[in-house]
Amino acid sequence: MAAVLKKVRSGDPLVIPAATFNTFVDTARYVADQRCSAQLDPARDYRQAGIVLIRNESGADRARCDVLGISGIVIKPTDNADAFKERVALRGTAPGSEHVGRFAVLLEPLAQDAIGLACVDGVCIARVKMLDEGHTFAEIKVSDATMLLSGASGSAVLLWVQPAGERDPDPSVAWVVAKIGLPAGAGSIAGAMITSKAGTGPPYRYAAAQATMDEDGVWTQVGGGLAYNNVFNLEEQGAGGQWVNPLVVGDIVLIFAAPDPGVDAFVCTRSHYRGTY
Image (cartoon, rainbow, N blue to C red; front, side):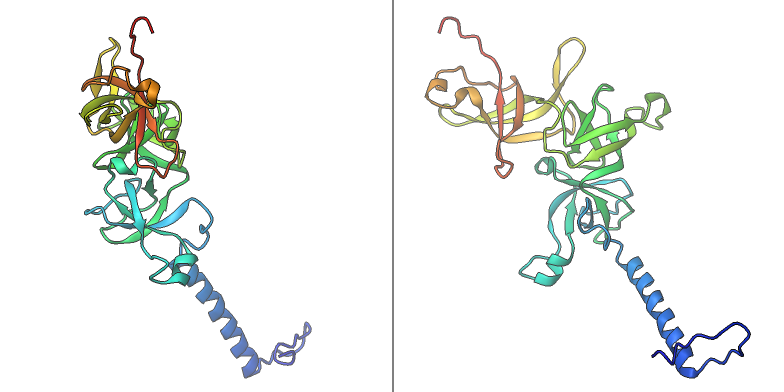
């Protein structure tokens, strides 16, 4: 190999042996192949970061900055252990209430069933329906993959919000710079309205919907907002809570996720004045 790649001095006649020329060609092909491989595998530099591959299973083509709920993984370890360990590839669907804190923002347009890059943890550009211009957090908007929904809490913190006067065509929808991937319910406890109650005695099992309050103190449900199923009232827990007045449909409560993120439930609380204890 040393003879094949022997250097020449300035002024010497340039004679390129076939073996030397072929080595140059092989080297150039190798470099070109590596560049092509990097283009075909855009996720290779993000294996330990918040940018991952995701397959669009939402039922429609999606635009850049759209939001998909995370519904699973593309390759399971039982399918192909080596491929599973090589990189993260998620399945994305239309966002539902079960995707609170479990969503991705697309970094490129994605046709139905296509795979592309998305952000699950980090700073990205998104669109947000601003329910209140003072909100500094956002969460998924149920059944709407085009934007997030602002709130007093959420798994996305709004680092910058497009001023209302610069928005077009809908002044309530803003472009934002958001940091996503926070714990669900980060920021502050959310308000919700009780929508149903089940059970024959406390602790009852409730359902609730995301609610907002206007400047007159009137609470209403948020259209397209979060739905909370499997909700338990902290004031009904334990022997001392069995006599607390239970909640009724229409009550406004403070609601937050169960302490263990692996538990599919929420807890809520509100104050009841019961006179002399």
